[in-house]
Length: 426
Image (cartoon, rainbow, N blue to C red; front, side, top):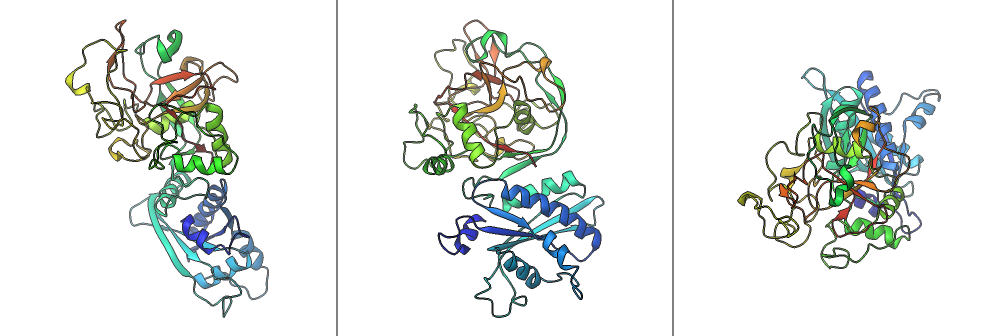
């Protein structure tokens, strides 16, 4: 979507193309739904990077005070309003109730808005369709937000020039966080038994989260803009290896990850948000369900010499990255996606969260953000070097790809298995 917008921008003078967002529809109730969700889409689109977005609802409402104005009833009319607002393109959003009870279809169409200089008949010229997409969901606010997230992803997912990552919508509600019993070992990443985390019902407000980890290409734009610093030199280095622009960036500290997310108008997800995005509301073991991890679902590694128990044959893989000795491009294994369509929540790279280390028993039951201060930040997921069902020398089993599995590291840590993704509040 953004590529089309940038092509319409008249040169370097327009560094941030402007997208006008309009709610269209003939029926009053459907128009009201479209107005609410289109305003949210405009805010989400304008919340990050170089892309600006403006809802035309206020302008159209002001025109109703003009005698004889009957409202926009055609794309040509909306295009004229877009030109008046100085927009480069128009995103027309409509909502229509389906024959199935309680479901609505949200449609979005991206149109080129001809400049006033080239429009021979301002207000009458039909705009050129660039791209369109649709999504279906419940007709309530949460259902329409979920449909809107899918639609934006299908339009290209490019929400901004600086962060072309499609985002998944996670609706508000309760989910089960953690697990029952003491399963994780008190060693290594899990210092002093802090990995023990009991199951707890947690309520979260709705949020968006990147469907994929932040890539080398995305992070490189931030470095070139002077807002981010380059990653550390690490093993299997994606940053300094040609041809890995679509691989996740790794070797970044928590501070570097947080700076990138802030630059694109987002933030790091809290630990609770990350876990809900990974496992949904049914308490599943893995993002995809209960089946054991394999290289069809997870970019994973091998049983290293740090683990001395004899693994079952199904656990053995030929080396990091399922034998590739590297990460994989983000989204390579859709079979491992979560209930919300979020990918690579297990494997590829471990991911920084916004939260300081704490056990779930100490967490608030509503929108927990974790302690205000601490020594170590929580990381989630597993890396391309990790393996499922490893056995440590002291006899404790653990599975790095479980949706509730936790790691802890000082925020200034930069390692080859660490990356991140961003989140955003609607």
